[in-house]
Image 1 (tube, one colour):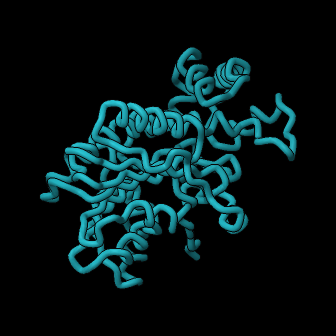
Image 2: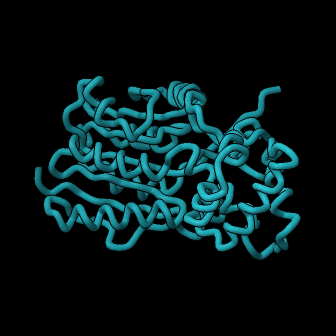
Length: 297
């Protein structure tokens, strides 16, 4: 029996309220996922309005198409990475857009489906690829990369025990190949106390691997820069982040854009989910929405 996966979009009303300023405009959802935000954007547009939705994961593309067709809604859906917006939009004959949305991180499906290897809560292969076409996996990093590179990845994710964890990994792989998410989780658990009131000691290591496998931070910077070339006067860019590394990049990039001129920061402070939303969707608790508007072209 096939398991049915669901995903609740984070900050749905707040995002669409900030994003849609022209109901006849063209909007880009750079992270389609299971179409939660795309569906809401479409519902706010007039007949002339249009949504171009992009996702790197072919599995997500299939699920999103089904969801949108069930709702009788339409969007132009493209498989690709939002970092390549400057190549994707011209292929779709789009020269100007009224808004761009990046909902960063990964979908609930990625965490909940063991075969994708994103979460230590399920036993699965050390994969973590958003796109199956990506040649790099978490397995390769853990078993093949040198100590210095692994330690650096884990350290910049905010893990203060990066050196100790990397030494554990390197020593273990000399004896046994680290194959699964459980192998890595158990290795770390053996040497750290697991406390109910704290994040799991493997959390930041898994985050570091995911970011590296999918080049998420580099793609974020490239995506922001690429999208700006297509944004019309009055258009807005909305970005939802889920951890401090992403949020710092967005905050500082937006600040630089405003300083250079032609942009206005719409959210002086990030928009956060309400207590009610977090109660209904725990994965929303760390979300932050930042919004910037183009004032000159």
